[in-house]
Image (cartoon, rainbow over all chains, first blue to last red; front, side):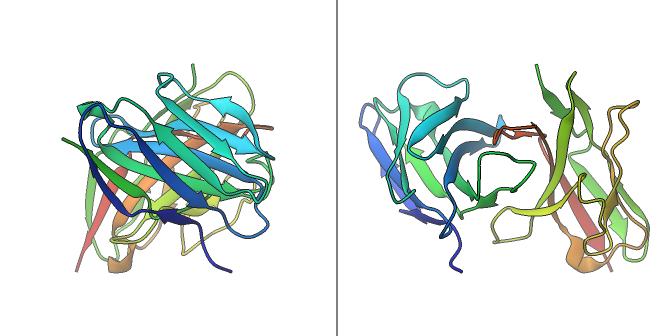
Length: 115
Length: 109
């Protein structure tokens, strides 16, 4: 089975712009989660989608949004980019909505640099 | 609020020495604890979880609810164990992980 695929691998954007990141989960996985990883804050949960519905959301401003399509693929959008949004954005998929039953499988991430 | 603490940023040991990576958590309910590992230039991957009570690559971890700890142990470290290790917490019915800040394990020959 192919793993979690994230595109693009690298992005450079300017302050004020917006960006869309894409994630294709492992085939058959219905839950997709997004995490932000920075040297200062570590790994922080952004949101989780299951069957096209956002089930959980982390403590991030409304500029961060996402969605999930019927084929379980997910996109994450960040509007009005700030320098502090520079980070590695990780996508993870799992079979279902409970970590008890199915652990997360992570992608390689998208490295976003805001200048 | 839920929190995971990994007090050591770096743990350096020699090959063959025992290893213990510490993890303490803060959560009032029934937690689900995990250890994730990231080898150089590889993606973050699950190493083990407390509900499995299994040994993976010689590593074990026991959930101690009294001490709210989930330390990762291996009796004899190998050079290939060098990696970044993250302890993570979740709770039943949710796919939201709270991660610790990670511990870099460096095993020298």
